[in-house]
Length: 95
Image (tube, rainbow, N blue to C red):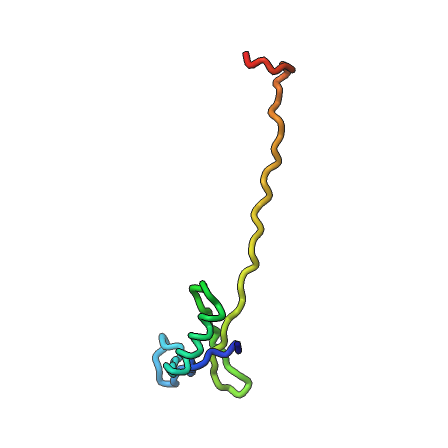
């Protein structure tokens, strides 16, 4: 599967848009539906899709799948078990 998001078309902010507008996003529903169907089949159980909005060398904006995943952390090693101190008695009598 390509990293390009099918049917998702980012566009730069219009020159007359207010400062709080950072851009536009157009979705071709049929193309995006097909892309999404394939993505779900390839990624069962995933809850999130991360998308990078990029600008190509041509100056045209595009959307690309962000496939970065954090490395799995290993659980910390279990503490070493030590024998209890015998407190100087040296026998096993409980009293």
